[in-house]
Image 1 (cartoon, helix red, strand yellow):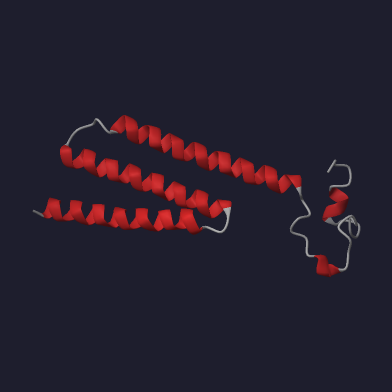
Image 2 (tube, rainbow, N blue to C red; image 1 turned 60 degrees about the horizontal axis):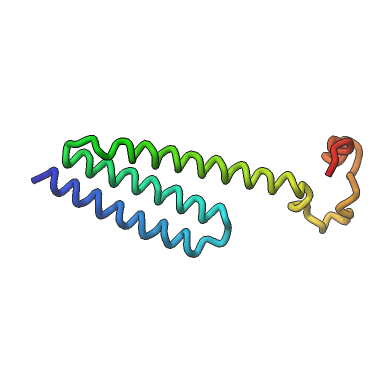
Length: 121
């Protein structure tokens, strides 16, 4: 009896987490929000399959769980590389223009601009 209550409670909580992550994927204002939502959704799927495997006492779901875990890791890694490459493409994108300097001005000696002086943009 206790096992049934725990199983139903766990599945209910996973359902709520899945709905919230789908909402984050749909509404997320940035790409990173959508990727975080999809990572949570993959984790919910993995956990749900693990609950089913534990309740039925079978191991048929273990290869699927492994593939989903590798897929989640690979998508997180690919997204991190994409964001990193995008940030490297425009290093001055986050510079506050209210400082009174032009974006081409490297700044005072010893500043970040001097360190990047020999690097191509």
